[in-house]
Image 1 (tube, rainbow, N blue to C red):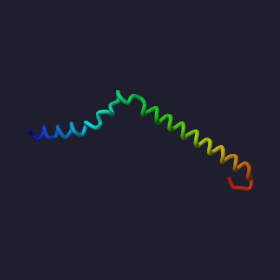
Image 2: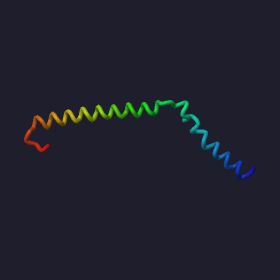
Image 3: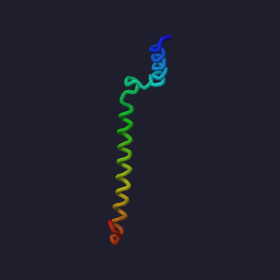
Image 4: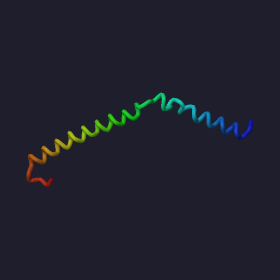
Length: 64
C-alpha cells in the first residue's frame, strides 16, 4: 500500500457521511426553510412591536 493510497482511503472514508448532502438530493428545501424561518421571525417581531406601540400609546407619561 502506497502513501497516496492510504490518503485516498482516508478521503473516501471522510466523504462517505456527506454523500447524502448532494445538491440534487436536497434541492431548494434548505433555501425555502430559511425563507419561511425569516417570515416567521418577521411576523413575530411585528406582533411584538404592535403590542409595544399599544402599551406606549396607553401610557403617555412614559418615555418612548
